[in-house]
Every structure is written in C-alpha cells, then in structure tokens.
Image (tube, rainbow, N blue to C red; front, top):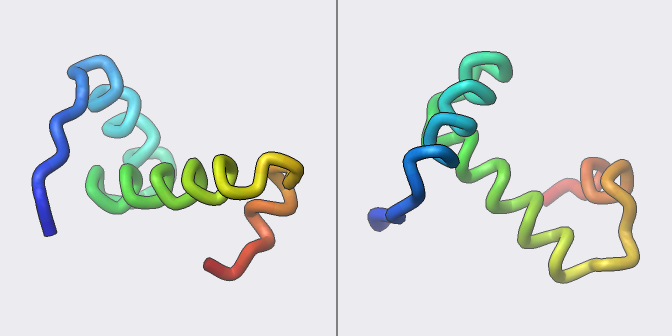
Length: 55
C-alpha cells in the first residue's frame, strides 16, 4: 500500500462518485485506476467490453 498524490479537483470528483456508488474514496479511486489500466492496455475495447472483464 502506498500514498498517491492527486490534485484537489480530482479528489473532489472521486469523493462525489464514491458517494453515489456507495464506495469508500479509496475504493472508488482503485476502481477508476483499474478501468483506466484496462482501457490503456486494450485500446480497441469499448467501455462495455471493459466493464464485462472479470478483473
């Protein structure tokens, strides 16, 4: 586990999304990081395909 420095605006967006998705702020950030990693590693995949990936 480590510390990740993010900008205040992004932190605010994570906070808002975590509230809507009923996740902790850390869990929301981890979710977005995983989705982003899959998107970068698989540029031909659509968002729907990425969301079907079992991770």
